[in-house]
Amino acid sequence: MSENTSALEAKTIPFGTVFADRMVTSTFRESTWSPISHEELAPLSLHPACHVLHYSSSCFEGLKAYRLESGSVGIFRLDRHIRRMRQSAELLCLPVPEADMLEEMIVSLVSECRDAVPEYPGSLYLRPTLIGTEPSIGAAAAPSSEALLYVFASQVGAYFETGARPLKLLVEEEAMRSTPSFGMAKTGGNYASALHHIVEARRNFAVDQVLFCPGGDVQETGATNFMLVNDQTILTKSLDASFLPGVTRDSVLALARSLGYEVLERPFTVNELLQWLPTGEALLTGTAAVIAGVGSVIYRGEEHRAGSGEIGPNTLRLHKALTDIQRGAVSDPLGWLRSV
Ligand SMILES: *Cc1c(COP(=O)(O)O)cnc(C)c1O
Image 1: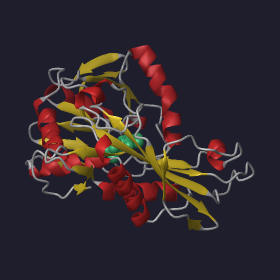
Image 2 (image 1 turned 180 degrees about the horizontal axis):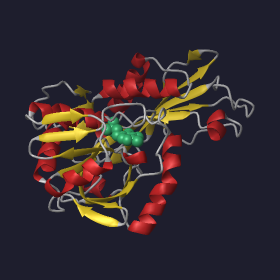
Image 3 (image 1 turned 60 degrees about the vertical axis):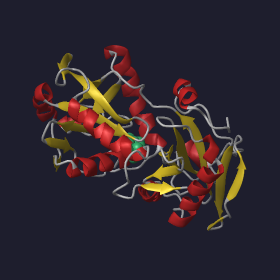
């Protein structure tokens, strides 16, 4: 699908299953990156022994290019995603791509696929990916000396339809999504270690997501950050290595400050969460879903409603403030859109 995808079409496509027909790659060998190559999107050819397939040397990013009301295309917070990709690469002991090269790869792909960027609320979801490709199963305790960096794109609709129903979460107090030091890496291994808990929770409690709160410390769900909000205040866990430093999280907090909310970033417990819920709201943030309202949480077998159980007014207000910028309906006061 390389022609302009209408909002309607994008809405009916399952998230992340339709791809633009171009990709950009660079390979790392003998300590250097090859020049950027623009190619037709096609299956990769990998040696069966390559490092990533055995020792999970991989990391990725997820960011979006939006079609703005002016008709031009804007990439949302490109600099933040590049910075985080480099941090993930470092944590995975993969070669760290230069910021300039990553930027050129992403911007040139969007430029090439500009006609494939759907109308809002659709967008072009960009997926930079870095994998260790050294063909050696002996390198279990050594970094991959070779790597492949590639960026491809997917036309996506709104993750949740408008009028999305509020989500139900399971509070998980024992299992960890990741480890105390690796949660900040955007890497497949963390998703793999969380998946079993999510599948069980869906089966046993018919929830949408699991909120990981090891030892009572409220962290995040499998793929989104978590916040509490009421008419005055936002509360979310302060950044540490145990969870993913979301760009949407950062954006929502910045907008909340400018709207006059008191923003509290500190660790908080499941008890505090349960006390908050009857008179407050809870929400999830992430690039794919942007902001999703939470209707209730299940804790030790009992369901606790957030406010009225519907998506609350503060959640809707923050959602509007953020998406107005993303779709170019208001000026971009914080310079978050890189126009292409
Ligand atoms: C990507 C991701 C998020 C959300 O980060 P954004 O930058 O807002 O998209 C949250 N948690 C996890 C585990 C993630 O992988």
